[in-house]
Image 1 (cartoon, rainbow, N blue to C red):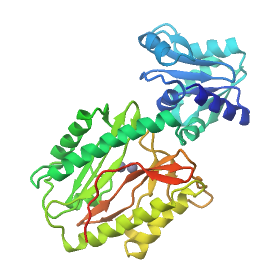
Image 2: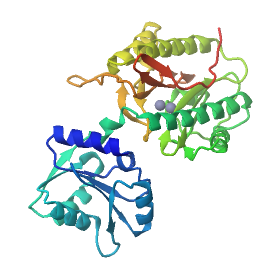
Image 3: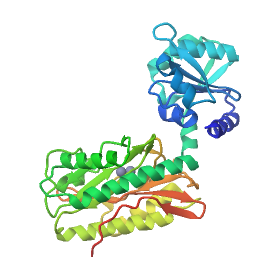
Length: 362
Ligand code: ZN
Ligand code: ZN
């Protein structure tokens, strides 16, 4: 983890920040390896601290040997009080905090404890930006999470029956993930059958899968904190006439966009490769979400592959980024098709990490 802390220190130096107070659990885990549900970090150019309570003292020492553990005592010594003690000890006059991960109430308590002598500087995305490019241990964990996900999909999808409900199917998939060693599903599994598949993030219910209808399955394993994410669209029995046209359009859009994933490509350009293909096929109004998202400790993280808003910026892809490529077409009253793979940006281009079987048809 030490090299990750050093990368953050380089950012702090660049931004002229004397220290960062880290609140986001994923950022904390990324920098320190500390996996508990309760804790904060303080990172300065020379020091690194974990603030947590008595439940996690031993764990913090084991998981994060490079960090000095300071105890929050409930009741007795609150997190803001421990932080105030540290800033005084270190002589800090200014401290950056994660604005997107600090509630107004928490900010108020910290301000009250630190007093007027210390200026709190809001920052956004400092650690998240580092997390966009994965290091080797992260890529190794993601490969495992993805392999579990692929195997679970390949086991369950061919065995689905028309009478299974969406909820039953979710359970079969979740079991298959867990049996292969996943800690959990990385997000609530989506199974959307027939017209429900027109809703990109349908909540599974008691509708049966049925025959000849599109069924979108979107799922992933979580392993040691790292997430996988995979979508396949399947049909039990013979699909209707429209299906192959829509499916092949989505598949071709995915293949075009995947070929565009490489170092230096701008996120919105890769999105456009798929979007333009879908629009040219006459389905431009039926693809209402971004092409893809980065993934790692969070299911959705940067870079985001989507259009840019006026005045917005687009992230250039870099080797080490892992992104989903997941175009879809959704038609109200009929259903939908989405196909999603995870892709690693490599120095020479890309490697498609997801290997679950896809429908092949005419
Ligand atoms: Zn997904
Ligand atoms: Zn996704």
